[in-house]
Image (cartoon, one colour):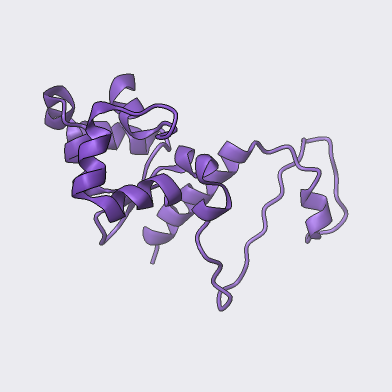
Length: 150
């Protein structure tokens, strides 16, 4: 299970694998999308999971990864988001901001901390304790939730 997941979730520059070169050549645009934006196109799996053991278990592996928040499916598209990879991409990995939509702010604090206001300014967020990787998982889960609501 871990071997299959590390084929997808890793720093591709530091930890190359045998299927990477074939994936880069066959699906260059999708490969760049994976490395820069954490978007896994379904077609890349045939190269990254070329091992027969992984290929035969593709659906159960994807389901397990989704269950643990390591993958978010994007309905209607052959693309999945890998939240752990968002931390590697830095600012390039963040989607463009939609200026026509409402913004959502979340603040995480310890139970004993009290804030008198319901809305906080950006300065309040600077002292938060939420790890960066956890933030990206919440964002990806929110995107997945948004696709599954009516």
